[in-house]
Image 1: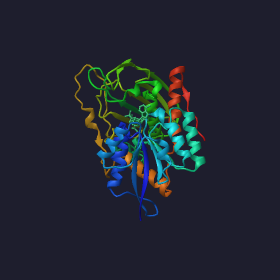
Image 2: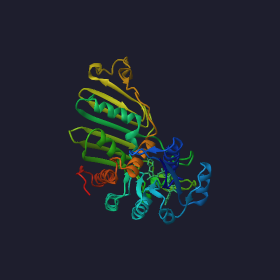
Image 3: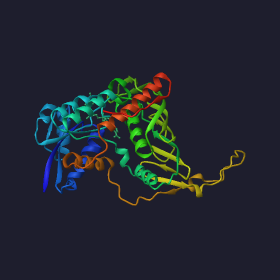
Image 4: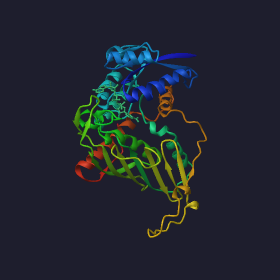
Length: 382
Ligand SMILES: NC(=O)c1ccc[n+]([C@@H]2O[C@H](COP(=O)([O-])OP(=O)(O)OC[C@H]3O[C@@H](n4cnc5c(N)ncnc54)[C@H](O)[C@@H]3O)[C@@H](O)[C@H]2O)c1
């Protein structure tokens, strides 16, 4: 049996909403014929585009041969055929819209962070639970090939005891005066939900906790390295949000994690995100898609001697982890899991409470920076 289900998609004129969620997830799922639920029913999602600008929505609908779009959230939410509400708006606009979707009885799925602060995220988690609607938050990095390979290494016991993890994330985001910026200007304004800590620490929370263990405490220093940028209209504006953060985290089991997040660094490493894991039995370095390893039996004897020219290629001591499977788009994989859960009752782990946990780590990082101290991150309950 095949069933069509309308999905309300808010924020689809934005970068993430359009590219990852509409085109590479929902339209790709339509193109493959839908998603099978545990009972064998095949669900074909039909997007309803939601946004603020009618001309842009109409253009988008036309570009992809879609007929349903509206600028009215109330009208969209009153459609009984729409069972799921999805939100990829700017972070600051999310909580209010999600609250209304829950009140209308829709299943809710949204981009990270679930809300701009922990209290609002917990409130949404409670509301969703009380309303009995399925709820989920995007945790896409878990489904990237590089992270999946790290997971495989953890499951195989490759590392022995994990001693330390180094996360390096970032690239140079152009200021906007002489080359257009490649990120939206609200990212650099705290009052509009910007800041790299709010943007990235929810990712670090679920990546670290799903791979290596719970975060127990952290210390963090933020910085606004570039104080002025130019917006989409070419107007200069002062940056009120941090564009870099330097953090150390302690995990259950004793592993120490260093995380550099920055939109003001130039890349000389394997990828825009690189995670190095050093364990007693082996080490790995993962990027977005690739991962390489060095076992303790293959570790060369390094000898410190800056007085002679370097004659050893340290990169040659590593070998690649093979794909061994085909990796679909990370956002699409998670959409399929969410639809199976919301419409077919399949289990699902990445709910609003998990999303709130991400905000707990975000708030701990801001507190640490503001108060210049280590901050504990206790278990979170509804
Ligand atoms: N999972 C990821 O890897 C990832 C990556 C980037 C962004 N995100 C998240 O996705 C969300 C959207 O980010 P983006 O980079 O696509 O942003 P964007 O600026 O490209 O898009 C924002 C969308 O929100 C809408 N919007 C609603 N109210 C608005 C307002 N008051 N001001 C401006 N736009 C408004 C815009 O019309 C647009 O559709 C954010 O919450 C962000 O945290 C997630």
